Image (spheres, rainbow, N blue to C red):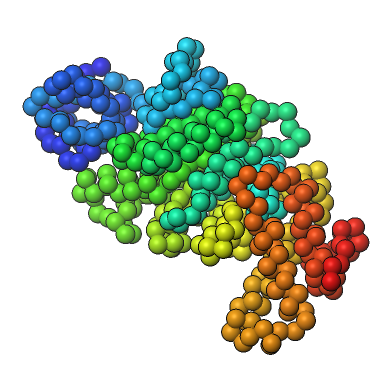
Length: 457
């Protein structure tokens, strides 16, 4: 460990230190200001004998002539153990709750490597979230990366809490855990998650990492890495199925842009750094299943799309890396459908691998395709009626309109505290399809129509 008092400049969250020796990229740094207050950072860049340090805390009060910088000779680590479950940490991995410290633990580098594609095992096991619009139409699979695209004012926090409470792998003896990482949230939102998990008992299988809105923005760079490190430990060393929920990745991207601007880098799209795709990939690609390992890491990053723009760099780049997206919709939210999940533009690219005989039910695939087709047709019919008037509709058109309204009111809308089994959701889907003539079910095989269809006039 080496100490220096050669700070040349303080630029936002960055320190530039001269005359350093044997300093490595990503090395942990401690900064001591005049009143012996300790702050932490990491080496962001080394240029000859100068090092650029990224602070994970505020740079306020740092006087270059009176501040000592200490290079620790190791990367930033997280203390991990099974005792983490049920505990709440801040964005730097320090316990926030009033419980005891971890007595027995290991240390893990938070800058873990992405999974080697040759060592990946293909995701093919169903995760039941208890939410019909996900389980039936956009099925979540063990080891998948499935982001949730939201917008300002939409209830993504409530949806995240519902998934954390209800998610489970069916017919599996492997323990299930949730790692929840909140970035840039308000104190009220933090209390909501803490109270919700405590009240429902979900905290007994949850590890929380919380970065508040009044915490340093730069701390949001390490908060998701802390959470992923904890999730990797539980999944691949303790053989658990782990769901990692990270909200809100937009605040993470804003912190990347802040650092890039401080370094005077040439900006990319909308001012975000050109390496944002690579940076996001170093997070997302740490999720999945590994050959020879019992556990798994399933990732659900949540991000709010600025101005609900799907082409914004954050959702756009996220969509390239992950395996689909779940999209929350303002129009559904306005008519009090909860969760307001728009199933038509949503997509789970691995859903076909997690459904069917032995996983959900043999009719799942046919039912899913028919529900998609019928709902899309009903939406178009409703739009036509709003333009031409209901008098222009045929009897069949009216049945499609009634089906669409019932689909939204009964299938999509279930509230944030209703936990439906996959069998219940599939049976409800058949009940709704029975509102249409049998001749319209062109995507379902006759054997399933004979078993489940009961026409309702």
